[in-house]
Length: 500
Image (cartoon, rainbow, N blue to C red):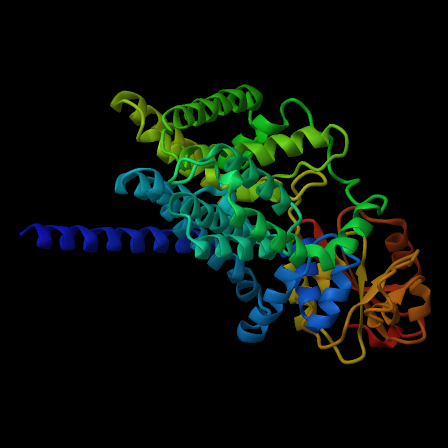
């Protein structure tokens, strides 16, 4: 009878896990193709279309390490490079992150805590948002939460296979995004505090040192590249300087996404106090030798605080860079719920549901900006380029404005002809690695007059002087606009007979 009851519970739990993961998949796939592929996403696809050797060489001249682009390269070989196909890699890693978060929560408390953590993670707004972007942040979140889980298992059981898994995950994280080093810092702090089964501090474990030397050696070949990238001017010039409200607003933004509402600062401070109270409760009640609750608190807060402190000297604070740490917050809140009295538990759960529901509504309305660099813009280059593709004639030229969106235009270009790129001052150091870029650069649009009969000028944003010059000197045939984007079709001065 007891065995049947256990089997019934196991089946119920398995079905609940499947339902939670299906919910996580559904909210990540819903509207996944709706938002226009922005510059960073288009850059990911453009770079991942290269050969693996070119990817490695090119990322050495970029900002981020190459692992995500190499994985995306293989993914596109298998599933294509359409919007849904390329974004689905992040969606899949996002769902896997929910599963891993449930495994971590199960280390702290009962099945109910595991289920609550899964539900909060499944609809965690910032997690869903970056599960719909063609960038490495969702992958990094999965790798770092998996590393946390492996380290917790090693702390509890002292078996080498867990430490080996941790080491491989950390190497993969460092080759995905440099902020993985902040995660490593959190793990070292945990090991300084936690004790193994024999009561001895984990920091004195010889395998810990050996495997970490292995991590360092594995990253050593890329270290000169990192040093060279750090020394570049204007690498992070676009990131805003941190303020005392940066961290509270980041916590609120993780749940609500949009922080432009009235009283956002007060709400952010109140919500941060709730998070800190939950973390304090979890830390205080953590009496186990391996201190799993303390590990979660350190993982969520140390990378955020260190980045904020460094940003007072060198701006680095961006929520997407710290997504891996923010993903621990729903697990922390679910674990704290188990430690509260019923009345406080209900109140905290209602607050969590309220903030996440607000964030999901904001997510699907898309009236906010998490991309950095200004206000939200209704860019619809996808719709504009669909019209250009349908009206394209053999011999036309496509001239893309390179202010921000040239790679996005290239992504949606289905004409069969590579776009020309307007760059008035072209000094791209990567030309030697990808020479076709130089062949497509146009410094002066007037050079197109004797090479083409018709030219499509595609851009987004305010009208520039070069666009006004085209309108004065060339013959306007058609104009397509959608949102903040537009395409203008011109006939060259001596080609007026070719009007559409």
